[in-house]
Image (cartoon, rainbow, N blue to C red; front, side):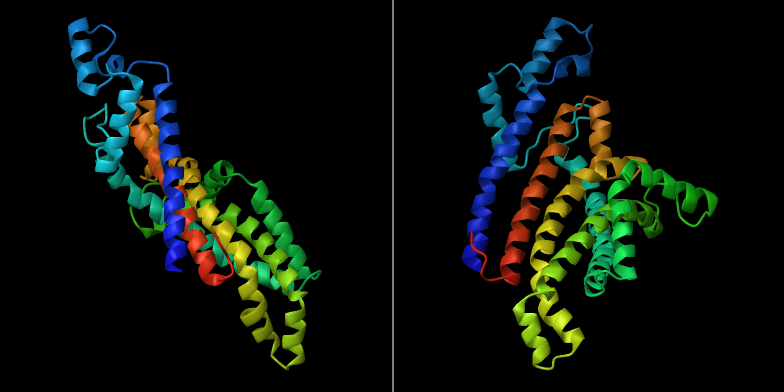
Amino acid sequence: MLNYVLKRALMALPVMLAAATLVFLLIHSIPGDPVDLILGEQAMQVDREELSQELGLDRPLFSQYGAFLAGLSSGDWGRSLFDNRPVLSHIREHAGATIVLAVCAMFVAVAIAIPAGVFAAVRKGGFLDQAAMVASLVGISVPNFWLGPVLILVFAVELGWLPISGRESWASLILPAFTLGFGLSAMLSRLTRASMIDELGRGYVTTARAKGLSERAVILKHAFRNALNPVITIVGLEVGSLLAGAIITERIFNWPGIGSLLMDSINRRDYPLVQGCILVIAFAYVFVNAVTDCVYRFVDPRVKI
């Protein structure tokens, strides 16, 4: 198991390097000069050249790329053009909110999807199965940017049960977490159902029933554990997607996470901070996928690199 984890970690390094390289190239291909954003277009040429030299923009692109990689490895991700604070300082202030939101959204999704998928598979063709599939179809079809405002109108404006936006208390987390988790729960419930139906039709389930095991033991101890493999894979992939997909939801609910920071940085043309936010999202996606593979190996020791 330890060798598998080490090999998976080594495989993640070139992916992270490729992601960092792509982000660097994309940021440097954006039209506009950061010097103009800081000093204004009417600044004197001497001041422009001095600032350009200070930011390292006067060097060749390959030299800037080398300095960029060196900064990443040493923890120096540059400074914000807006307030001259280190990029990592901004990210540390907002990363916690995004992680909390993503974890809670995933908890909502799993809490809804796993029981719904299992019960739908056990009652295949019945009313519960049909109701769960209709609900999952609705969940897949409803976009976050529509569901979020509707939940605000119903539970915050009309009923007054929950805060409209911000991060004042744990109650402020309910609406954005449900907005993010609802669509994911719809997809996971269909996947769980399909995986459970496949496992319940296998020979070892028939053998377990023939040995006199209770239906509860057959479903939970045998079929459900084997049905988890594809579900774990999708959950791991979607955790990374939640970090990126939380941008719209954070904006709707004014949640102070990485997504809101990224949108504010884009509006201010704060390129170093935009670059840092995108790198954090990309690295988090790679990291979560590596962890998912390790969990997959723990659940099913037959998995190989």
